[in-house]
Every structure is written in C-alpha cells, then in structure tokens.
Image (cartoon, rainbow, N blue to C red; front, side, top):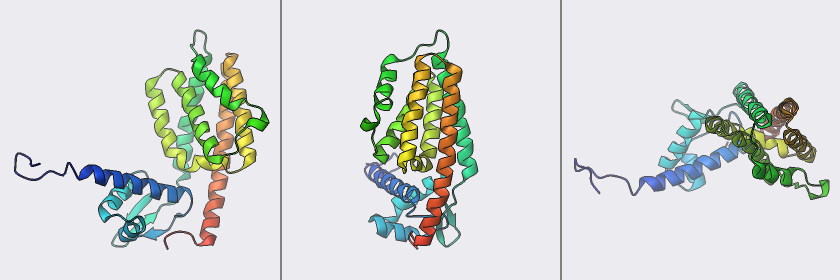
Length: 242
C-alpha cells in the first residue's frame, strides 16, 4: 500500500513490531520486578536483542516506554541503565491510592449509597473463606488482591475515579506483588479484607475507611522493606545481564 505521495506505508509491519515491542517491554519489566535486572545494571540494545531473539527496533521501542515510566535511563554512548526504585514516587502513588479507595468505601457506606450486592458477594466469597480454604498461591492472591481494591473503587460508581485508580494500580504493581511472598502476609490480607467487607456490609463508612487505611499503610511498609532486601540479595548474587 502507498500513500498519496507515493511512499510505501508500513501498516502490515507496524502491528508485528508493536507486538514484539510489547513482549520485550513486559519481559524487561518482569526482569526488573523479579530482580534479574537490579538498579544500576547496564546493558545495550544489542544484548537485549540477542537475549530475546528480536531486532533492535522492538527493543528500542520497549526501552523508550520503560524510560517514560521511570524504570531505565539511556546513557550517552554506553547503552542503558536500570534506575534505582524511586520510593518517593511510589509513596506518592500509595498516598493517591489511599485517598481514592477510602473515598470509595465512604461512598459505598453513605446514606442512600447503592452497593453492588453481586460484586460485594463475589468479594465475600473469596476473602471470608475458612482458613483451610485459603489460597497460598502468591500469584493468585496478588491478582485477587488487586481485583479486590479495584472492585471497591468501581462499585462506588465514579468512572473517572476508577480510571485514575487503575492507572495507579498499574504503576505500583511492580513492587506491590512482593507483599505476597510470605504466608503471614497472605493470611493478614485475608483477615484485613474480611474486616473491611464486614464494615461495608454494615454501612460503617468511618470504620471501613480506617481499616482500609491501616491495611494499605502496612502493605506499603512491608513492600518497601522486602524490596530493599531483595535488591541487596540480587546484588550479592550477581544477577543481571552484567
């Protein structure tokens, strides 16, 4: 296909490049999250191209995307570098998350507020099971936890608030998942979610907001501690491309 100027378009190629760039983007982000790449690690586009079996074009697209998100930086004539975790930025995102979620539960409990009963029952079915019925699968619990918090905001009925919350959720996912690497934290999440749901059922907005705030603050502190520890272990183990 050609344009009106006679120049060929790349409509058939671009989707393939986008797909490969997305795959490389997800893999690099996963490597950072799993500390295969740790803050300070340096690498070149050629190294990533060989590692992932793709050309430099999707690698470069993926890296520019990660640069915009604050995970890597380009070094003048010497490749790329993984940036240190910006805990100040993460804490600001957690603060925003807390404002949105506590506002949402207050709305759910307000006089005249309409709770999505079906959605609430789905959450209750997951988080109020007997101890013997709880999942110990870190990946599954992490997914359910994210869905729990997103569902509370969505149930409040403000689409713009839900959109902002989803964006915040995406940006903190890389460190938030670490909160489920220990069984004690999984058990605490079940207990705390159950208490929050019970307060919502009883229309006790202040109590629900207080429980939710404490839950998020505890998770935030645990995640920071675990992240620092994992980075230390990864550096000692010499993980990374170099």
